[in-house]
Image (cartoon, rainbow, N blue to C red; front, side, top):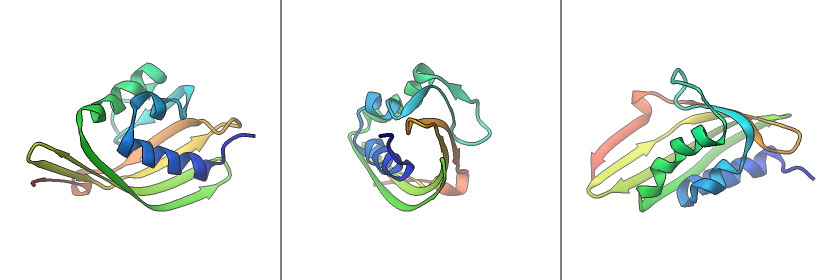
Length: 124
């Protein structure tokens, strides 16, 4: 039985906080696309998507909080917060991700909506 979109979203948000990168990438279909943030270059396929999430591997302190998941068929809108700490820097990012799923429950497309107002950098 294919994973339900809500289950995949919850796993995704958890893995963004805990990793590893390969587990995040495994949630995506082979030829999936990611546009993060919206308006940036679209990444296609596991290798390109892995590059995006690999940046999180060097961040020892990271936490996520899932706020809202709205599912409509094979689509989900997700609001969550990612907080990372690296040295004395603290970053808080609050995106809204829009995901599309295939019949197997894999993410085939993800677009992350966030801009400068959704990213806060501060000294911790």
